[in-house]
Length: 439
Image 1 (cartoon, rainbow, N blue to C red):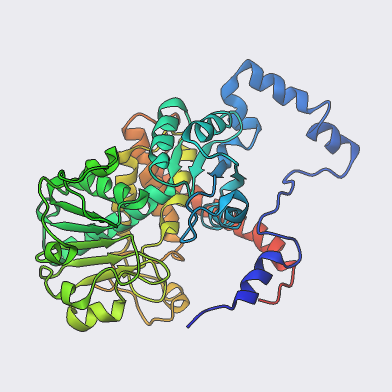
Image 2 (cartoon, helix red, strand yellow):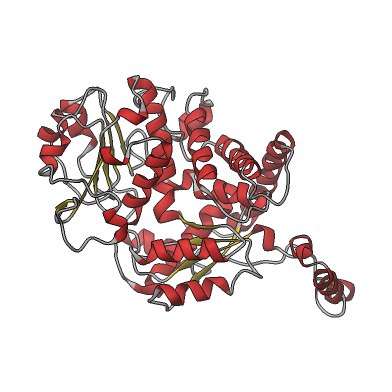
């Protein structure tokens, strides 16, 4: 059943102040002295300090807590190429999630840029202002080139969430599902339905985790990707099987995992029946998964099932990743978000799912309890412990791999994160509660 009507959704975005974000001052400006400090002549002291020592920009400005969410609107949600204006509500929403879950400030930058060169050139010019860049809703294959070039050419973290968010969250699920099934990651056979940005990034991430590349069978709209096919781009070609192993139904036989990043009804109950014992299905098409949750459980109750939906167990939700990954990266002033940091995030999520869950979190999801097992392998997005588990794990990986410019005391850092979020929630609650939106 829908949680809202079309009219309620439009009212949410248009009521009172338009949109979902607002910029307001965090320093007083109520008298002449304040005005002189905020702007001329007092601001010149900060300018001189930064000019003399450029890294102090992190001390005297908001750069260290500011992320640019950049999109050209060419691959928005399930809406496709709708352009930067129509994609802006999504980017504003991304800003809300950054703030609510990790106290990171965001400017959403929706740009009229079609080519990879245009997007890269725009983003490169942002480095003096922003501490990090979250690329969003940019179509494949351009998104791969854009991210790779920016990582090489910039000294701040660049992260394309459409690629890596699903990879990291589902990766955490794989770690725990395989533990439950007593299987080794290097032995599993993975079937992937979809060959866009998320599917390719997930597959690459699974390889980094230990899945054998030759054990990944990827399907696009034309069927199995194999070396006998023409017209494959370099990213698909990396997952081409040597021979044509047949249809999706053929390849599903004996599979240990199915990852769906494609369309509703991509697989059937008959296909599910042929999978290996204690298999994994992550059907992430939204709002309707590649196969309904109840259909899977009807024919194979042993399967660990996850979807992109919040009304079924094991939701693959990107909000479990990007706010905390950027929090950890920003706080140790990482110059990049590397593979080790992503893997650390996946393991931190997997570990958190094994810990007892507070009663108030269970109540928020309308359940009596949440315990590690087939129906709970991924933490819930509203669990506040995600921040204090993921951000330190990401920062530690950054320090261990040499991309961090600041060394953190991780125990102290966890305490500071808790204090930071308590203060942030208090401030933002006052702003939101000052308006009666009728929701």
